[in-house]
Image (cartoon, rainbow over all chains, first blue to last red; front, side, top):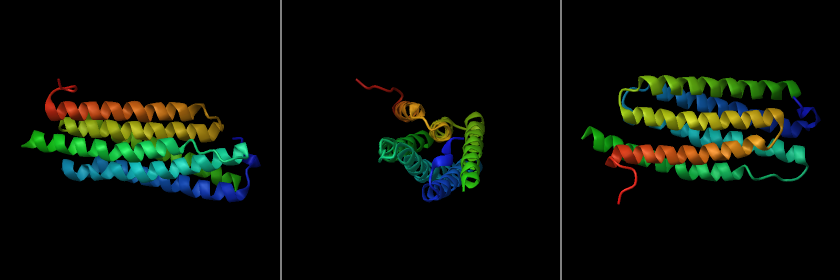
Length: 102
Length: 93
């Protein structure tokens, strides 16, 4: 690990965001595995997709900015892209499930 | 503080690996096709997060490009599979 030069006020929020994002993603995937009907199973991974991805990307942005000594914001591309495309996939999959069970 | 950060990175990686395992179990076991498509969607998001964790660990920006490409092509694949399940063909004339 090479992050020994980072200040603690960068490392503490980044570590908390990483733990929160990992826990949210794990809970979402556990919901995908354990919930029984498909319409209930749909809700689990969307939480991990949006909130967990946002947490991890903000942590990555903090680390990259502290390492480069300037603001590095290109991780926001992935955040915006996931936040735009995850509901679209969910809507299409739900319509497919409705039309297949009918 | 550095030890806590190392623990956080390792914890997040274990979480994403477990999440990928759960998604793989659902992908292999899913009763219908839409369950498998949903499991594939979860699997690619988790793989993208795992690549970002690798990028944090090694403090390089190479993994960011791979994560962006995985997000892009994963979305295209999920939408194509959902459209196929919905209509029976992907690109309609």
